[in-house]
Image (cartoon, rainbow, N blue to C red):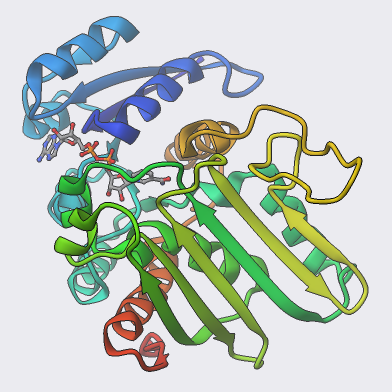
Length: 344
Ligand SMILES: NC(=O)c1ccc[n+]([C@@H]2O[C@H](COP(=O)([O-])OP(=O)(O)OC[C@H]3O[C@@H](n4cnc5c(N)ncnc54)[C@H](O)[C@@H]3O)[C@@H](O)[C@H]2O)c1
């Protein structure tokens, strides 16, 4: 029986979900059964103590204590601005790190982190959970097997039902960096192609406080891939119908859509059509429950040396480059070329 102890930093919106998922991995990870134990910390001590107690996990008062306790891997689920410092702490400790997306607030801040990881032989998995979602995996398989033919159009949609707190939005880097970055990542991963240009527009018809912190509540980016294929990536914080995440890929032979199921947050306008007839998805946590669980299981397998890194910091920064370009386009009103990584 293998024994893996994970140290989790941050038990806010997503950290609590990771805590639950880590706790549920114990003994079910592989046929041999891997014992997975959880230790956690958060600057909100009382809250973190409660979460730990509820899961039979151990609370530690600081990140330094967590690392010193001898954890086998560090899971970072704090706000984005803290990611670089915490990634460095995990790399310094010589343990694999899982860090929520993105690596840093923007690409300029992320590049020194990539260098630090590379220079110190760090192992860092970034949390783009859609890479583990069954629908995206099937779309990638179909595309790469040539079943769709050549692709003429891609349309990616990510809509939340309600906005996160304005305090979070004020430090999130904007809708493209916080939300659409998942679509930028999955489009690169699925097609194996680079997005080379972005032209973005946004609007603010919801809470004016979102505009006051410099963000938009709804946005659309026209993207161009390196082979000239075009697509759109759209996002909104105000989708009353439900949490709506879809990707439509139209090829010369076939069209597939990820996220078209009985729980899709859609209603047909056609007479007699009742599909989709389930309760619509409500939150990202529920929509991607299976993907988040698989992602954390993959991190344990990475620690055990049983798999390749499924989402490297370089992958994540490549998606962030597109998000940065989209944000620049939103501000300038002009199409922006995506800065491609320097060849190394
Ligand atoms: N992959 C996804 O689908 C997804 C979804 C939501 C959020 N995220 C990412 O997860 C990160 C966290 O987002 P959130 O919405 O959970 O934020 P949040 O503000 O709800 O939670 C952050 C938690 O970290 C704690 N914290 C902050 N700094 C700390 C420190 N130095 N040491 C210990 N604890 C600290 C806070 O007290 C808080 O409890 C962000 O980077 C965000 O981009 C990813």
